[in-house]
Amino acid sequence: MHVETYSLPHAWYRRTAAYLARLEAENNLMLGLAYILMHDPGAFSEYYLGTVVEDEQVVGAAVMTVPYNLVLSHTEHPDALDALAANVYRTFRTLPGVNGRKENAAAFARIWS
Image (cartoon, rainbow, N blue to C red):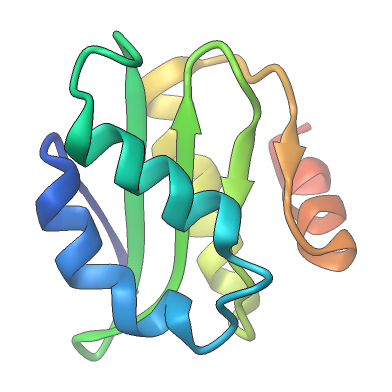
C-alpha cells in the first residue's frame, strides 16, 4: 500500500473519480474541490491531493485546500489512514483538522496525534 500525490488536479481526478463516485453523495466535497482546482487554478495557492493505492486499486483518497481541513474519503482499509497520515505529515507537519466519516476521521486523528 502506498500514497500517490498529485500536483495536477486533472491527474488526481482521473485516478480517483471512479472510486469516489461509488459514494458520490458522501464524496461531494472532494469532487467539488477537484472541480474548482481543475477549472480555477488560482482559487487556492496551496493544496494536497492524495490517493491510497493497493495492488493498483484506489482504496482511499484525501484533499486539502490550505488553510482548510483535510477531507478524507471512506476507506475500508485501516492501513490507508496510516499511509495518508505519514504522507500528509511529511508535507505539512500540522493540520487545522480533518473531515470525513466519523470513524475514519476519528481514527485518522488518533494516528495523527
